[in-house]
Length: 639
Image 1 (tube, rainbow, N blue to C red):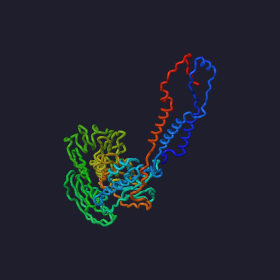
Image 2: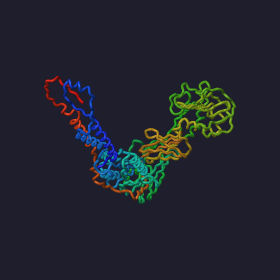
Image 3: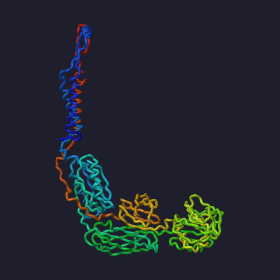
Image 4: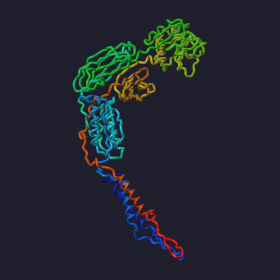
């Protein structure tokens, strides 16, 4: 038996103080007795001062004893008197259950997760009944599934509902988290039991394992080969061709001959056609790569399969959704379409339709180019106005100049990026009156002659015709049109790359230095994902399978995070760590609290003392016999 809340000295001090006060109250209380006297004697005795006699001994010792016993019982209840072994009870244990992606591998007819759940339940049943247990699910993150819980049914239900995740195990982080939560409870730290095969993604040799570590290792002598990474991008020379790169890894201990097979099909269609295959020799612990090319401009699903299948089939198959080649629809209204045809036909993603000004329609989509005429109604889509008349220009014309040299380009704007020209003169040009938010792309000495307005829709106005001026001999002319098309429709001209990777931390090397404001990372539901950008390396984290989209400047990266992340490092446990299911002393299971019964007995003792010795004891309510006297009516007094 032992105290849980108070020490023996504290209990003795409190009980001694209460006992001293109780005894003092019994000794210092004034004694009173009743007498029946005659009326005449009452008035004579009243002339003398009343004598108060103090008690020299306790008149009701059993009342005092009953009060002291009751107070002692209540103090024992407050101190939480327990029956059992105090040094071996009341521990807090942490079960670190491996829920990494590797736990989905099969060993015989059961998965590693099934074996781990069985070991966790056996360990839970071996723990003393008075101990508390917390379950932590560990993959790339350490996630507590329960609090420190004395109810074994809650822990058992959490163990049974644990499933393999999609990321690799970070065991150092999981053990550090378990050690931290144990130190925050204020109770005795029990064991930290790791249950799993010990295959981790990374390990810090400097990280010291906890001293109270227990290992319940799950055997995983499983041979596995799987897809490691898949990358695809459109060819720089032919945008209809996808360049495909596939990497596979051998996680086992024996060399393996595998076959990579590619198939392609439209979305929502089960039938696919073969797109390529390759034979690979995978050495133990090594990677092998294969490159393919596939021509398609439409959207579809590309499937990559690794055969023969093994005990972990989750990394043998991957499907990637290929986006269609984006095209920009351009409608040109011009009386001389041949002047603009060379500049537009050089862009591979531009589909141009040429119409006369009499065929104008204000509801055209894509991009509208208006060559030297004012439509009756402005187009609803983005537009480029070439040398518009002054009376209908979307940007007011301030003046018209002739034979003026071209002065400068605003190369800080994407529409004029990389433009360099020699000295050339414009025969005739309109100088515009710009608003504060307008962008002056090109200028002469008198003012801007090429102006962009960033709104909805976007507008670009040229105060001269490039093909009817000296600029037609400059290399900057096709570059100017290419920059304008890219600025007006950036989604069409983005360089797209599609990759299949593992969930978890994704590191993306960028081709250029970009500010964080020029980068955007979104999840499959278009919600933003946090990221870091340092030394041209973008890093973000996704703990669940899905897709992620990265917009970085003029590049777009689409990640299909569907491959499971497997650790390729075998953790070496410390030699002094406990192993196997523990056996605790059976006396721990008989340790239980006594305070509820002590509190009831203490309250019952105080009630009994009040009932038998208090003011309202039964003797007060007993009927007193009447006394008949011949003297005058007596008076009842107290002294």
